[in-house]
Image 1: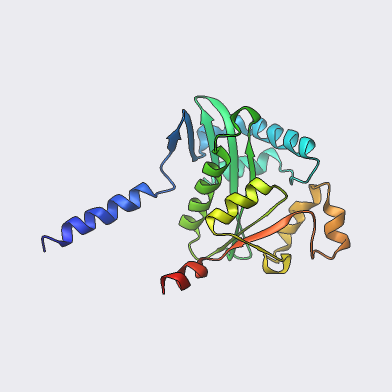
Image 2: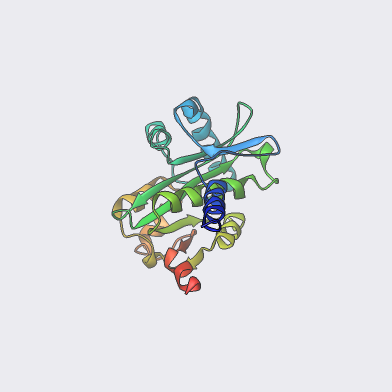
Length: 208
């Protein structure tokens, strides 16, 4: 009986350390789940996403202020703050009757790049997705090599678009992308983005 209590304590401690609901601070930048107090950053978030799309010359699906506000109110968004200054953002969304979850809108303000912040935000979004939707497949579309590397480190694998969600609502989100015509011409088989997928069943197989 004396052995059981310490083991329980260790289990609880481990769970708390990996809890995505806990804010994480590193180098003066806090990465956390966004809440109502973060609503004043919505316009800044949208402008940062828009500016990044123009610089890259590649597609980032545009979202309305109402959509970003909804993600924040649902506690389905990750925000990075340096004091009161906005540093980065990402949000999660479920598709196909919660069988798939996408981590989208990953953005880091220029002055905060080069210090692993994108990886911290992405990891937080990944953990939140696994916490809220433990059986769902996680996926994303990206043109960035840095994001592909982060995804690979988290366990994602490149896949064809046919292995991603067939939820029409998700694909409609691509209509605001400058490359949407490519997706249409190829009958949604491929585009400039690379599809990446994480299936929790892969981990279960490793455990066996």
